[in-house]
Length: 142
Image (cartoon, rainbow, N blue to C red; front, side, top):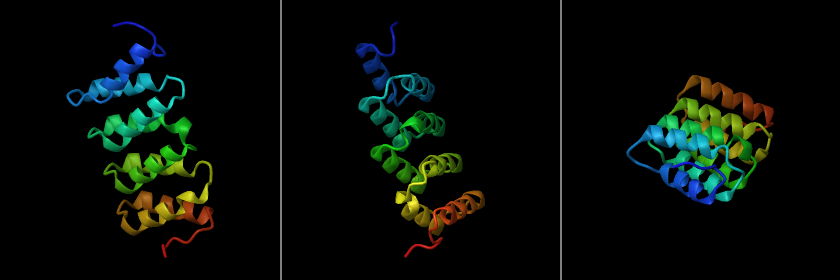
Protein backbone atom coordinates (compact mmCIF):
# COMPACT_ATOMS: atom_id res chain seq x y z
CA UNK A 1 0.00 0.00 0.00
CA UNK A 2 1.32 3.41 -0.88
CA UNK A 3 -0.02 6.85 -0.32
CA UNK A 4 0.22 9.95 1.80
CA UNK A 5 -0.63 10.07 5.47
CA UNK A 6 -3.27 12.73 4.87
CA UNK A 7 -5.21 10.40 2.51
CA UNK A 8 -8.35 9.18 4.35
CA UNK A 9 -7.86 5.54 3.30
CA UNK A 10 -4.22 5.53 4.41
CA UNK A 11 -5.14 7.24 7.69
CA UNK A 12 -7.79 4.58 8.37
CA UNK A 13 -5.24 1.82 7.70
CA UNK A 14 -2.81 3.50 10.08
CA UNK A 15 -5.44 3.92 12.78
CA UNK A 16 -6.27 0.21 12.48
CA UNK A 17 -2.59 -0.80 12.49
CA UNK A 18 -1.99 1.26 15.64
CA UNK A 19 -4.15 -1.26 17.46
CA UNK A 20 -2.72 -4.47 15.95
CA UNK A 21 -2.31 -6.73 18.99
CA UNK A 22 0.15 -9.05 17.30
CA UNK A 23 2.95 -6.67 16.37
CA UNK A 24 4.34 -3.99 18.74
CA UNK A 25 6.90 -2.98 16.10
CA UNK A 26 4.11 -2.19 13.66
CA UNK A 27 2.31 -0.21 16.36
CA UNK A 28 5.43 1.89 17.08
CA UNK A 29 5.97 2.63 13.39
CA UNK A 30 2.29 3.45 12.93
CA UNK A 31 2.24 5.81 15.91
CA UNK A 32 5.32 7.50 14.46
CA UNK A 33 3.52 8.02 11.14
CA UNK A 34 0.36 9.27 12.84
CA UNK A 35 2.41 11.95 14.61
CA UNK A 36 2.98 13.54 11.22
CA UNK A 37 -0.77 13.80 10.67
CA UNK A 38 -2.51 17.15 11.12
CA UNK A 39 -4.10 17.71 14.52
CA UNK A 40 -7.34 15.73 14.21
CA UNK A 41 -9.45 14.40 17.05
CA UNK A 42 -9.24 10.94 15.52
CA UNK A 43 -5.44 10.90 15.60
CA UNK A 44 -5.37 12.31 19.15
CA UNK A 45 -7.80 9.59 20.22
CA UNK A 46 -5.58 6.88 18.69
CA UNK A 47 -2.50 8.29 20.43
CA UNK A 48 -4.36 8.50 23.75
CA UNK A 49 -5.62 4.91 23.37
CA UNK A 50 -2.08 3.69 22.72
CA UNK A 51 -0.70 5.70 25.64
CA UNK A 52 -3.26 4.41 28.10
CA UNK A 53 -3.79 0.89 26.88
CA UNK A 54 -0.86 -0.56 24.98
CA UNK A 55 1.02 -3.30 26.80
CA UNK A 56 4.34 -2.34 25.19
CA UNK A 57 6.18 0.51 26.91
CA UNK A 58 7.90 1.48 23.65
CA UNK A 59 4.54 2.02 21.98
CA UNK A 60 3.29 4.00 24.99
CA UNK A 61 6.41 6.19 24.93
CA UNK A 62 6.02 6.86 21.20
CA UNK A 63 2.36 7.80 21.75
CA UNK A 64 3.40 10.11 24.58
CA UNK A 65 5.88 11.84 22.27
CA UNK A 66 3.13 12.24 19.69
CA UNK A 67 0.88 13.93 22.24
CA UNK A 68 3.41 16.61 23.22
CA UNK A 69 1.93 19.19 20.87
CA UNK A 70 -1.53 18.56 22.34
CA UNK A 71 -0.55 18.91 26.00
CA UNK A 72 -3.03 21.73 26.60
CA UNK A 73 -6.05 19.79 25.31
CA UNK A 74 -8.29 18.62 28.18
CA UNK A 75 -8.60 15.03 26.94
CA UNK A 76 -4.82 14.75 26.60
CA UNK A 77 -4.26 16.24 30.08
CA UNK A 78 -6.72 13.73 31.49
CA UNK A 79 -4.88 10.86 29.78
CA UNK A 80 -1.52 12.16 31.01
CA UNK A 81 -2.87 12.31 34.56
CA UNK A 82 -4.10 8.72 34.30
CA UNK A 83 -0.74 7.58 32.98
CA UNK A 84 1.09 9.55 35.67
CA UNK A 85 -0.82 7.74 38.38
CA UNK A 86 -1.04 4.27 36.83
CA UNK A 87 1.75 3.46 34.36
CA UNK A 88 4.34 0.99 35.61
CA UNK A 89 7.19 2.56 33.60
CA UNK A 90 9.04 5.33 35.49
CA UNK A 91 10.30 6.88 32.23
CA UNK A 92 6.76 7.28 30.96
CA UNK A 93 5.61 8.72 34.30
CA UNK A 94 8.50 11.21 34.21
CA UNK A 95 7.61 12.32 30.66
CA UNK A 96 3.95 12.67 31.69
CA UNK A 97 4.98 14.95 34.56
CA UNK A 98 7.04 17.08 32.19
CA UNK A 99 4.14 17.52 29.78
CA UNK A 100 1.59 18.21 32.51
CA UNK A 101 3.62 20.99 34.12
CA UNK A 102 5.14 22.67 31.06
CA UNK A 103 2.36 25.28 31.04
CA UNK A 104 2.27 25.73 34.84
CA UNK A 105 -1.45 25.03 35.05
CA UNK A 106 -2.65 24.33 38.57
CA UNK A 107 -5.07 21.61 37.44
CA UNK A 108 -2.29 19.08 38.00
CA UNK A 109 -1.73 19.79 41.69
CA UNK A 110 -4.15 17.10 42.90
CA UNK A 111 -2.60 14.45 40.67
CA UNK A 112 0.91 15.40 41.77
CA UNK A 113 -0.15 15.20 45.42
CA UNK A 114 -1.69 11.76 44.80
CA UNK A 115 1.52 10.69 43.12
CA UNK A 116 3.51 11.72 46.20
CA UNK A 117 1.40 9.36 48.32
CA UNK A 118 2.20 6.28 46.28
CA UNK A 119 5.36 6.88 44.24
CA UNK A 120 8.35 4.77 45.26
CA UNK A 121 10.81 6.03 42.63
CA UNK A 122 13.10 8.55 44.37
CA UNK A 123 13.77 10.63 41.25
CA UNK A 124 10.08 11.00 40.46
CA UNK A 125 9.29 11.85 44.11
CA UNK A 126 11.97 14.57 44.19
CA UNK A 127 10.85 15.97 40.84
CA UNK A 128 7.23 16.00 41.98
CA UNK A 129 8.09 17.74 45.25
CA UNK A 130 10.00 20.42 43.37
CA UNK A 131 7.12 20.95 40.95
CA UNK A 132 4.58 21.23 43.76
CA UNK A 133 6.73 23.87 45.43
CA UNK A 134 7.05 25.73 42.11
CA UNK A 135 3.25 25.73 41.87
CA UNK A 136 3.00 27.01 45.46
CA UNK A 137 1.19 23.84 46.49
CA UNK A 138 1.53 21.58 49.49
CA UNK A 139 3.42 18.35 49.05
CA UNK A 140 0.67 16.59 51.02
CA UNK A 141 -2.89 16.09 49.82
CA UNK A 142 -5.80 17.02 52.02
